[in-house]
Length: 525
Image 1 (cartoon, rainbow, N blue to C red):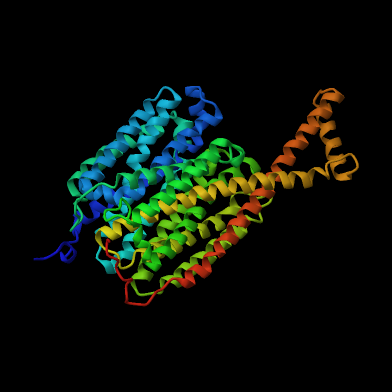
Image 2 (cartoon, helix red, strand yellow):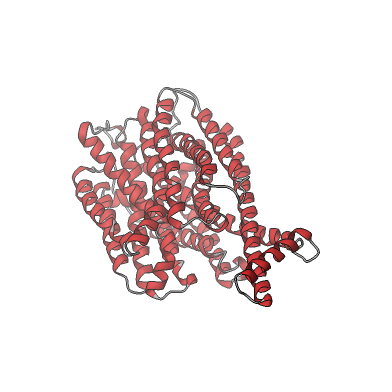
């Protein structure tokens, strides 16, 4: 009798294959767009529903927490309900919750539906990747990962630009309503073309305790990372409590999953050396991808005075460079080029982008950033696809789906950790740089005294009294000081991310790769 492990897989062909891939990658892009599309609209949303700046942050936090909880569980849920049913249901949940987000009339209604939307979105992301990878034979896995990698890059990059455009020209409700027609079409295509995974078995039992420990650990950790800066980290009893819950939940989860026969998440897969190394690389990739998307808009708007729409639109060419580079990387991998060499090229290109950004000045304009952002796009393409390919090489079926879920969770957590660390870094740097600069803004410094005198005379010429003119001059100096300190801090932020990316070089060298020999598959139990 032919066992599930020995069933010969059948791969889709022709139009069916590409409709399936387009459906999956569109859903992944849709999910990732919604991680960032809200960011530039928070001010309008808070004004519309009467929420404070602190409260409105929950609109982002709720989505991130449910997203990162559900991602590692997607393999188990796919087996439980069948991949076709689970993926289609995720699209329906995501689409319906998008409608309800747009119809929300108060903060906590919006937060609740964003949490539900994150549950649907998390199910889309990892399942979409397993669908795309499953549509290609093992020797073409690089092409599959290149296609999925485009979605990972395009989603977070297009999100702010799309959110800014919709908010400026329509209303914030439409950042959610725009998902509905796409979701309806995706639902029909998913039910028509997505198939169940070959050889997948329905779990004998559900690991409820494992799920509870995972929810407690990952949900609490994500909350700490999202809210830590605004609550002054461990000065807050709330953050301290959730940190303890995260640690205890993680320990209980690991112990549970290693000691039962039906784990919700098969963490034994980390016995695969390359998957463990690939997870570290995925973590750094998340830090780089989401960290630079976080820091550049702040830098451009605060230090250079760009608008939100202008900032978001500027980042699109970088994503397009990635989209163009991905097929090239796929061909290089397909022709037998060493993935480690390609990753190293990507690291050095990305390092070049970060170093160019680290030497920005108050006179920097859009023209100064075109080349760095081209390098960013190409560098991410050269890193992402080979990392995905090396990490899951040799894994099949359920193992592949589990590994993909873990990889996506690690990347999302890397982004959350990256943003949290950059927030802390920038807060400390702003204070440090401001303290250094204030020492020069005195009546005894000729340059500062001349600037204050010039500003004062300028206000007097406009009809202000001497006392008011001087007060306005000091306010003007305060504004210039703030922009300068922010510029220096952001420059050092880019430099710090650049140095951290170099840490990946020894990790890449430790990855095992032998041409023509895939990694050894690992059994489920």
